[in-house]
Length: 325
Image (cartoon, rainbow, N blue to C red):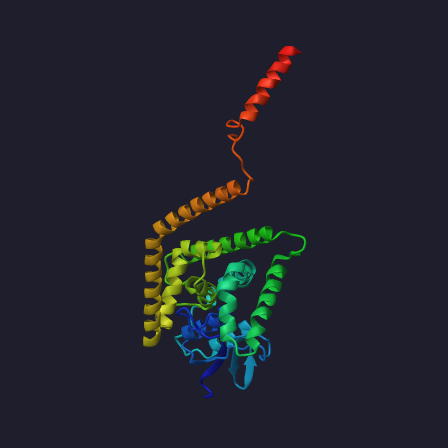
């Protein structure tokens, strides 16, 4: 590794992102903002790293995994005139970074690792596929347990003494308020502190871009994020400007978009037929159940004794007995 090039071990990219992991994406984005060459190594294995997590920044013979230290190393290597907005805005960066860690991070982790549908459909399959064998059987579960620990610790709750619905309500309420604060601070600017990106922009991209790009079904956090249009625009602006897609990635994106469009067309065409088939199936089931009930004697109509002469004679005799009595 050349002395002037940093090396960072990361989780690989997908969904038009250079990395699907929030922290990895933050480091990659900040290095781009600072104009610092950084070689990304798609390690996809946090087990043997010093902290058991990714990313890991390698510089000057040292391996660093603490976010603040990694960003400081990148910042110090930034060429003159390329350094992002810092200085007078440093207090705001720290304040919003703390706010996101306390209020937004639990909801992000919950979305990826504790939301049952997202975990089963997206998160676990992705990390199991990306992780090397045989660790692909172990890593997703470990990340799941770590996320749960962070979420419950951040909310200072005992999961045995509070319902799942109560925990989720608190987590997502705080996250929505945090997104509102970020959206208000960004306003109509290109970046949080004007025309140049900052450390805060890198952290926001790390948290939000994967939520926007991943194939996640309906989720309350993502729905609220999409309503904050300026934050969505910020994410897309950074990705297009600093991480443009390669020709191969563009072709893959085109194919995915075409598959999605065709699936939506098929679903829209099949919807009336599906509704009709469901109605027919329900009607057929009802008729079949009624036929079975009649044939097995479970249900009887009261017509049997009407055509029975003995039934009429019994009634007549009963009347005679009453008269004689």
